[in-house]
Every structure is written in structure tokens, then in C-alpha cells.
Image 1 (cartoon, rainbow, N blue to C red):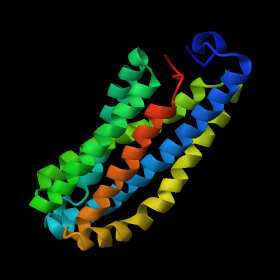
Image 2 (cartoon, helix red, strand yellow; image 1 turned 30 degrees about the vertical axis):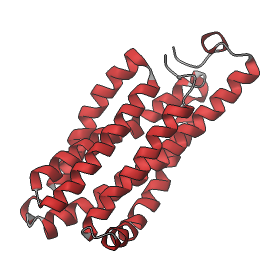
Image 3 (tube, rainbow, N blue to C red; image 1 turned 45 degrees about the horizontal axis):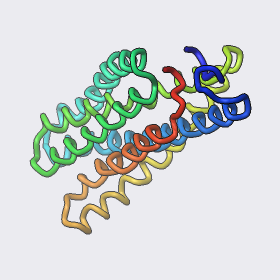
Image 4 (cartoon, helix red, strand yellow; image 1 turned 135 degrees about the vertical axis):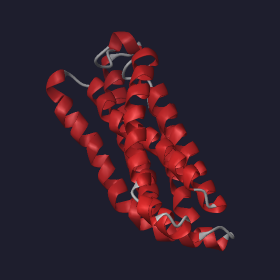
Length: 211
């Protein structure tokens, strides 16, 4: 289905408008939270490769892993959404990203470059949920309003673009305060923020825009 309808959702006209508004802002908030976590991890990944793992020649590899993960995620999550709805696909992507953040954190603790690449691959995979959220927003509205709906959701990513790098040193200080390496801290930002995005989509993306 291309948009939420009163018949599909079992709601009257006023309720369907409220559901559209709630879902739209849930998507915006999810993208803001998700992009904050993803950008924090991406920001620090090159530094980890250089300073902690000592592989300066391959410092760009974590970024490449993110791109590869995003490509894989777009295919897999789109398939899930086509069969099971937007909510399940978005939540699954975000949770995979949280798993990747834990793996990336462990790469700092164990000084393992392969673990860093795996973690960033999974983080990139989950970042596809942010990209696919714009299509969920488009499902909410008639065709002539889809460009605006997509633009509103994309705007949420600007929050992450600002907040993500800002949280890197903050997370580093928090990590050292509990006995973890400073560069492990930023990888815990997506654990909190992307995890919150997953919870938000699970709770508020109802009725599903595409189910």
C-alpha cells in the first residue's frame, strides 16, 4: 500500500491524520537519533585504525566497510519491508547497527582490526534504516506531497551531523571515567542513540506505513 488509509488502519479520518503526524515525527526523531550514533562512530573509526590499531595504510578501510554495509543493508532491509512492513525493517536495521557498535567497541578493547571492519560493516548496514526512513515517510502521503515528506525526514539527519561529532569527546571522557579506553567511548554513542531509534520506531510506527 502506498499510504496509510482509514480502511487499512481501521481508523476514522481524524485518527488517520493523527497517525500520519505521529508516524512522520517518529521517523524524523529516529533519523536524528540514528544519524547521531552513526556519525559519531564513523568520525572516530579512522582515528582508531590509525592510533590504536596501527594500520595507517588502511585507515580508510572502516569508511569503506560502512559504505559496503549500507549497500547490503539497503537490499536486505528493503526486502524485509516489502514482505513484512516498514517497522520491522527499520527496527531490524537499527538493532544490527547496535550490534555493530558493540563489535567496534570490542575491537578497541582487543586491538583487532578485523573486528573494527566487521563492526563498521554492521553499523553501515544499520545506517540503511536512516536512508529507508524517507520512503516510509513517502508512504504516508499522497504522491503530490511526497517530496515534502521526504525532505522533512532528511532534515532530521542534520541533527546527527551536528550532534554526532560533538559527542565524540564527551563519550571519550565518559569512557575513561569508567576505566575504558577513550576511543572506545564514541562507539557506545550508537548503542544509546541508535538503540533509542529502534525503540522509538517499534513503539510509534503504528499503523505501519507499508503493511
